[in-house]
Amino acid sequence: MLNIRNVKMEDLTEITIIESLCFPIEEAATKEAFEKRIRLIPDSFFVAERKGAIVGFVNGPVIETPYITDDLFREIKANPLTGGHQSVLGIAVTPHFQTRGVAAALLAHIEEAATAKKRETITLTCKEDLIVFYEKFGYVNMGDSNSEHGGVIWYNMVKILS
Image (cartoon, rainbow, N blue to C red; front, side, top):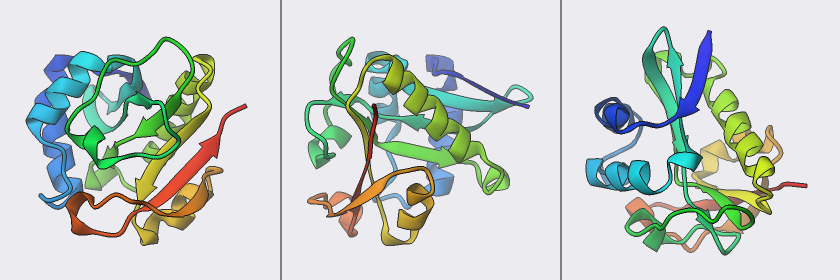
């Protein structure tokens, strides 16, 4: 069974390892970035555990605009209590647990938390090959992102919360 909970600082090593397994070094968040996110946005940083081991996570700050900007990968601030746009800066599932519904469960969990806090949208960027995956969960492709993160082309995906 999958257990999803808020992140704790003790999760840092496992999260950093999973990130390095899922993303090339140019795109992967650093240990320092994760430390900052765990400290500042634990209310929108969730880990999925199976039998006590972390198998995936999702995280991102609440932002004022409906699209992610590259500065968020360097600088974030604590989330407002309500409102704003829930961003997803990262979602990663350890390779052994991919295609088993872990990412879907994490997306559902962050959406539930965002809805409870009256966020307007959930916003993320993805590469072209993942557009169809996110569309299955109700995200709409809003076109090319201005992001140059990792030197690749990203697409803005937005889900309106009601």
